[in-house]
Image 1 (cartoon, helix red, strand yellow):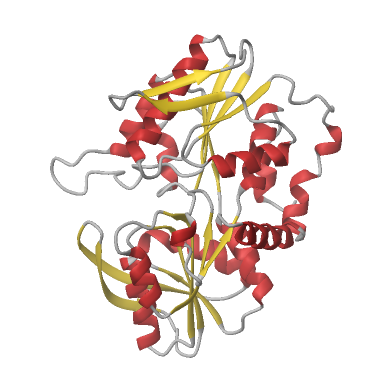
Image 2 (cartoon, helix red, strand yellow):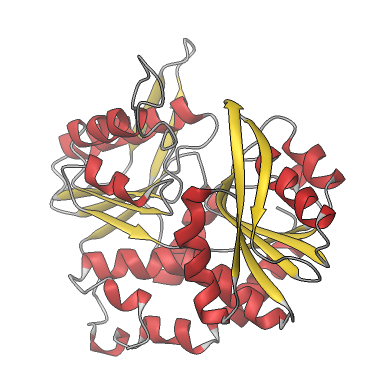
Amino acid sequence: MSEKMRRDAKSITKTILNTTHHQNFHQEDNDMPQDKFSHLKLFTCNSNPELAQEIAEHMGVELGKATVTKFSDGEISVSIWESVRGKDCFIIQSTNDPVNDNLMELLIMTDALKRASCNSVTAVMPYYGYARQDRKAKARDPITAKLVANMITAAGIDRVITMDLHASQEQGYFDIPVDHMLGQPMLTDYFKLKELEDLVIVSPDHGSVKRARNMAKPLDVPIAIIDKRRPEANKSEIMHVIGDVVGKNCIILDDLIDTAGTICNAAQALMDLGAKSVYACATHAVLSGPALERIEASPIREMVLLNTIPIPEEKRLKKFTVLSVGHIFAETISRVYCNKPISVMFTND
């Protein structure tokens, strides 16, 4: 990421942090001792080191000394360069592309830490890959979301912190505690600051209706639903739009954007039905295949994304606004380590 883009992202995030909702995150910090992280170790693999560094800065700690490389035959090599005996270790690693390498890095680092006699290992997975295969959609389908959860548990990981699973019930695939963070409140706060009129929140499919309602409620606006059919993987066909979008500023909300077929088709359908403008937002920027070309050619005015997956500079379209989740994960890790409740991060009580 260029220095200018980094400054812009931090500026926008800082503005959102100044809202009442996010100010409440740190209301208990004064009750914590100055050496509160004395037995905590924060490590990162190779999927998102920039986010890991930002989390460490928010927490006021340094990243642990470790290297993750490959042998000449492609096998992953992990070296831990400091003692972790008796420490509570947190590994920050999304399982985005290359998903298999990133998953194995997480598992192998876990094994290294466990064999070095650490007290616990928490996997901080801003993006949890393989989550979309969460059921048998047809005969002889695998359920990879459950398979990966089993692998994580078998490796010795004691806890998972993640954000916006494809389906929230996937928390039940784990036999260990899962802290499921939400990106939607931050996206909601961003659009509050824009003060758009005649808003409607659009769910791109039936599976995202609850997510759309959660965004619409604090904005006090209605929702609309895209009724789509998916004839095969990574292809979607728009069928109907349920709700009034004529003359409205529409915000399409989804958990992730992969090839962008769904969200671009939805944007075009909304404009064809008389929408005034279309914005889009999502937590995870997978952006594979023809995603960038589709988004650039679409009528989407602005796309707001979170940095759970790193977006390289060459993929950063002018339409993109990227917000950082570093403060959310820093706060979550702090609360988990200090045995403080996570629920207060989702309420204004």
